[in-house]
Length: 507
Ligand code: XMP
Image 1: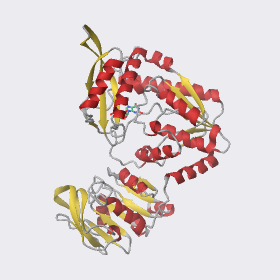
Image 2: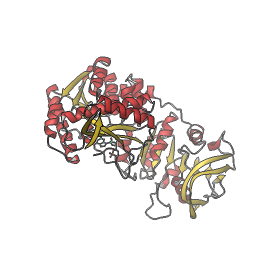
Image 3: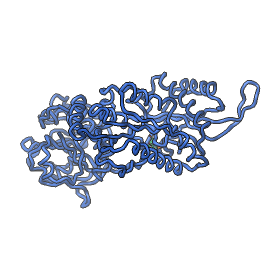
Image 4: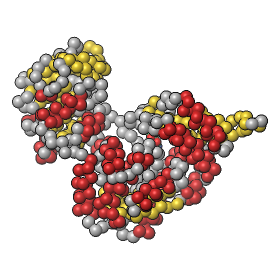
């Protein structure tokens, strides 16, 4: 395995994903991790991430200096490169202007890091501070017209550094550079593959769970579905999935979840038809946060009731994935997502342990595991869907009639997006029942009916997003089909706001 020491860089998770793509397992830990802990974990290599600070500031994050003496190969990236230079006695300085974006650089010396790469290449830079003079024992291996040390190395001590970001796709040979670090320098074996992950994880779960029983709250989302399928592979009928159908899922989704898990996987599945309960609790409620709170609480209540009926269970299976762990774990990423899945599940319903088989996986790896386990594409490639479901896409009070209109309109929109081959290109797309009524004319008569808004966004992290440039003819087709096929809708608008200033959801 390889360790990524996180100095708060925005690309730390991206570095990890690139390394996993190269079939090497890696972990992200805080820059405060001690040399002793690192030494005892048996890492093949260490990568220092970038970060927003300036190394010679007093408060700037510094690593345990003993790490440089562990004889484990290190690659410093951007801030990590500067930190390596600064800590070992090199000179780091602030440039007059920030160097940002695609930059040509030239390789000036032999380096295992650059094996097989053209002497002149293009990389992605983002910095103001730069290495002026490398520490004693280091050799400069690449330069650019503005930067005297684009890359440096001390091969004897296995220390390497690049001012640029090899993990970013604009660095032309970034993946080869990382490959060289992992395979030429760290001598990794490359055994991180999804099929072997499934095998090891199943063996471990068999050991941990033994003859005991597990329950899982299935939402139909990618993470809980894959987690359930994986636990099922390990312990079969010892797993019971509880699927709380709150009636706020998209059209046909509850049936799809039931079909897949009951028929295809032959799982113990309890589908709780709780639509009436949720609607009753939501009756008269218009305030968005209030709706969220009610849905979260009710979800837990229903889940608890069902769990009690099952009797003694020992483990709760959760679909926690690695970004969740990293965000709460290393404590120094710049932005922390405050999203609120449907309730945290209560810890007092009798189980003694958690089973979180996806704890070390990124989303794309979760999808690969799902596909490998035989889950259908509709589940594996499902777009993100908020815990409170369609309730936050209906402005104002939620009623059965409004839900029915929204489900139908949304289904048409999804169908048109899929037909246009855009379903994996647009990261999230849906219909909103705006609560606005407007005047229209149909046939010879006046109408006064609902306005549906369509929303589509492209984003990589859902923290910021751009509105999707959906072709006009796709929008036109969706618009006319919704008007024709869905009763009580006479106007369609398309949402052209990015996030910020808007959010992706309307409530
Ligand atoms: P916003 O609307 O905040 O949404 O831009 C960002 C992403 O989060 C999803 N979302 C939620 N997911 N529970 C969830 O599990 C929620 O309460 C919730 N609210 C928003 C939203 O669909 C988008 O993908």
